[in-house]
Amino acid sequence: MTIAILYFYFNPSSAFFPKCPLYITTGIYCPGCGSQRAFHDLLHFDLNGVIGHNILFLFGLVVLIYQLTINTLNAFFNKNIKSILYHKKTPLVLLVFIIIFWVLRNIPVYPFTFLTP
Image (tube, rainbow, N blue to C red; front, side, top):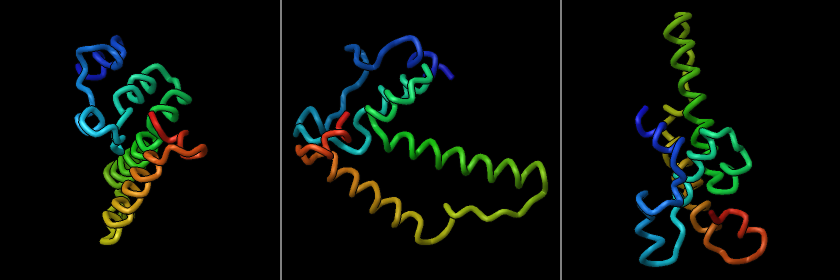
């Protein structure tokens, strides 16, 4: 909760927030670059800002909401809904998706520049 308050009141572009070490040393955007600013924008209900800083953050949020919904339905309504996140191939699919995103956001050509933070 304290982190959310900190990110709500302070813009992560300020000096005291940590910067991405990969970007600082190599100039390559990692899959998480822009996530701090995306979280700040999410707390201010700026969906365009979230998408602009890191669209993968938004997909991660959707996955988190999906899992919380499954857990809530199973706990409160005595359901036995299986989550697709527990499928044995899910980690591999997510890893491939993240790596593709990582590669595409570092291509400095027109449609891929929308993926940069």
